Length: 324
Image: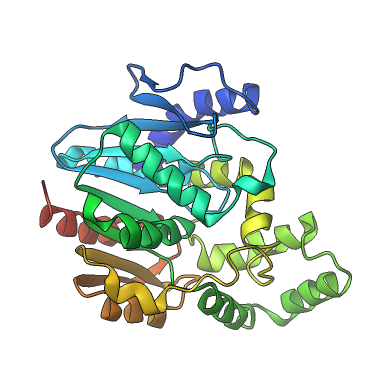
């Protein structure tokens, strides 16, 4: 794909920076450079990385998934939004990607991350902007739309259900679709207390993720990089060791009853082979008053990659109706 070539060129220097600056960064905070990169110092003293791509009256802020992953798997947005006249912003949440990685588990909570998003918005000077939240970023997006909806012109809720219990119930169903031998291997590791081991993770990546995360072979460079630099401490603290064992502080998160309070125009996106139940995606669109829906017929959790043409056609059509 055209996006793969762009990523190969862009990720080499980013990976080098990440490897050489894993803990603290010397880049001046709250300043931009000629690549659109801007470091934002948060109220807690830590810095997060952002990058502006393109220009235009309509601003779009992207919230990546995880928790604990990086913006890199969303690099494909830069192949579509700037060319359509939108000013978009990549952003690595604290502890993720190129942003600071403090060794403080008290930071890995939904309320603190929600405050962080608002700090980033203020620092970037965004008002009446479009918020795009994917996966865990969709949780952040729902929370932001409920608390700060007046700041938004539109909201895109991509590939995320409205409760963790719903997510866990569906991944349990997906587990049963795996070959019997794979399920037996996973069960043996679970019984041995090794559901957080590299061996367990390798099986998931080979058997579950290739079916329900991204169905492309090989995976896009940015997606592979996001897995390579993922912050497992954040993932475990907030979600748990894997998709089947939900022990993190997000386990009780549930916003089904509050979806009707989202007042901004919303595009709800999902896919047939998603880790999120397509019926739950439909239910979200029914409960949000000003919502429309896109359900990919062939894509997965990352339909932005494995059903890219249709995913971005739906997204750009929605954005065009809500230009500033």
